[in-house]
Length: 70
Image 1 (cartoon, rainbow, N blue to C red):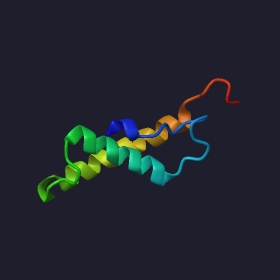
Image 2 (cartoon, rainbow, N blue to C red):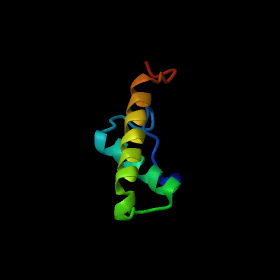
Image 3 (cartoon, rainbow, N blue to C red):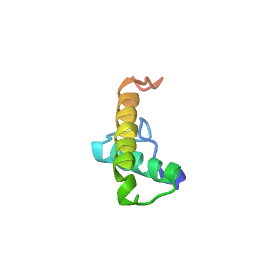
Image 4 (cartoon, rainbow, N blue to C red):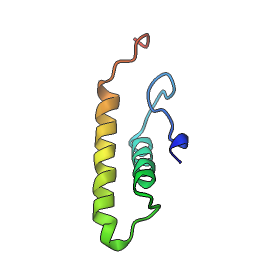
């Protein structure tokens, strides 16, 4: 499953949307947890994890420097 998460930095992706980042975060958490959709009692933890991965991904993409791209 994780193999299909797309690289979200230049030159692989010109424009990355919040939707792209959220989808990658969701796919990552699904892979790690082993749940495609969590049970009701795990929903909050699952959603928090997706939010955290989404935030970390956005921060990473905003701060990394890709050599040769500027």
